[in-house]
Image (tube, rainbow, N blue to C red):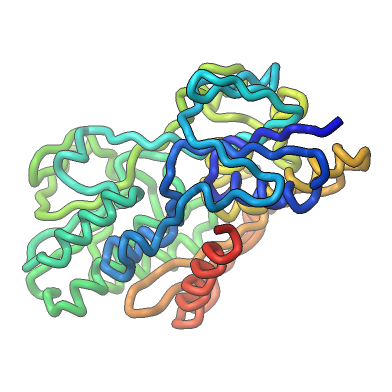
Length: 379
């Protein structure tokens, strides 16, 4: 009798899980991929979109195109998840499976009414509208703001600030413009270690960007932001990251632990429900240093490969012999056609072991190549 596998969410992790399973299991096994959005955005490209390096239509594809032999795409909001019964409900219809992989990412919401004053560059609409304002910018104060922790892609706000500064420099508006970055964390990409964090901060500040760490936003208004230390700053144009939280439909289940996220076996991505896995941003994986594994697409990618392999092994009656080992990498866009590249083992003991390669044009073009590869391979 054929098996049914439910994959929740068509982000990086969900797409790779579904595609890998379609290749590995075949036969009578059915893979159902659930996604609420018709437009499937490649999130790393939003940084280029916000500074005019991409057009909106270049950074997304139709979600239905992720379907393949053995993969059925179901578009609609997930109304209920029952991990005990391995079932989900979409538009009133219940779908039951033998295995479930939850890759719904983080639910993103706007706090402090920031959407009334600035642009959420983690969304297609926000990045597009920020770019429209930037193209007509004549000078003033530009703020890149992180209002709360955690947020996915730890490098993104720093990349955004450097790309905006590069745009301003090219437009010869440097003498008329101040670019500032306000974040609640003590330094960039802290989980990666002091050396890498210091290197990223140096990159930012060498570009003349004003960097303000440990700034927790408490209120926002038109043209002004206020932080918990009493500091108030004015701005003319603002881009911000949204608040990230566990999706409401998952909060209603017994999957969520004390962390507020799904807690899993860090090597196999198994939850406390049999044959139910969770991968990517929706998970909470504590590291030895006391901080959680960052929320980043690269981890969802490798976790997806692990889970797909092990489910296929289970279906075939074989040993589940693949583990996620904590390795990860990321590009760091710097503007002017250059990028950095950092990678290593985040499960390192007692601290993650992460190093950065010498920044240059090569890493930027490698990221461009990966964007093209992603769309070609998965759509």
